[in-house]
Length: 253
Length: 253
Image 1 (tube, rainbow over the protein chains, first blue to last red):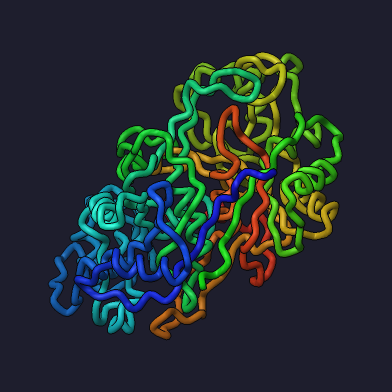
Image 2: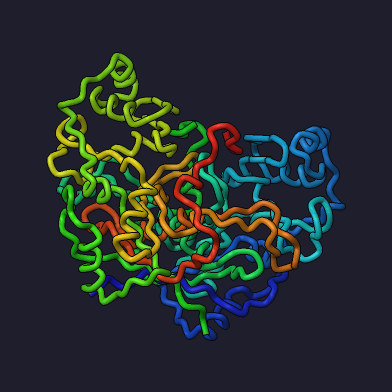
């Protein structure tokens, strides 16, 4: 017999999410429609976008007053100065600014494009610099825990798609994590030849988020919530913040 | 009803892989044991390690003569000079060398630690600098296609675990890809509000590899082959090489 498969199921039929909705209630309805139960050993992966919408993390760009620095940077990256100001306000550091590219370190520590500010899938945000944009949740781990608590304690990952150095294309990663070992430390375990593993930590939450990203799909057919069954959750809890390397001491850079 | 789940099933009962073994035949036996069929719409994710073993990509370190550069670098990274020479021989460029860390660009373009040279799970490689090490396949895309052809044309991903800048922990990525769109181009598609998506390419093969990494598990319980059902394979084929950013023009660095 095979091991039980690791199964990712996208939940169908969620309405557009607006500020203040009871996301847990909507999820329970969708799970019912899918004839899926929710065990505490299950994981729900939720797109950051709908968490931000439910938490009202929208910003009207016409209310933003760009600083001189934002105006200068906007001329380099060829983006709306108010959009650039919104990115700077969300960031602790600018890492890369070239035409059409603005990579920063978000205040929460994530290195990502545009501080995670999203212009797509927000009703009214018809083009860059116009209308409404969506900021990341204030604290993605806290958002994950609130949802987990409302759902009886299952694991929750708040995920978003990230570009990567050296590799093309985006993959989903975990921004916020509740009740799941975001990072699993294998150091000291034995490999198949009985030798001690020296240096491997596994980014389990990022891997679950990446797999869920496939089930979510993209563009018009995308689904923002994925139910995951079969992840081994026995290692100690580690938060989404544990996935961030210290600013000093990055092995790669 | 839910969409069909995306299902990752680790194959059990594979023997230790040695040079020249008929991997396709072993996989078919394991699939039979797991009562899994193999459709051309399925994906097999195979750990690079067993591909390298089957292809005889082992190197006896005692046969390696370290160059002066390898000896100098070994003193910096605190590794065996013969091991460092093996890494240099497999690499086109050294990106980072500090104590215990040697990041290079592999000849095939992958940016990774130690040019992907593996000391664990090789019988006889009892510690760094002793015994036998395992090199990456000469051409991971070609290895994926050979296995795919021997299995009737299903999609195949040759995967390995990579560290990442800015984020802790390793995740599996795709080195070689056959019959699967490693990169899916969404540019020009419409989002849920009907606006055209501007800039998203999705690293589908990396996401599948990451999900399969969860099913593989780690250390003593790890399983090097995962059967995946439910991935949308309709986009045009793109190879593992398509996942590599050009050396010039990396957005992040």
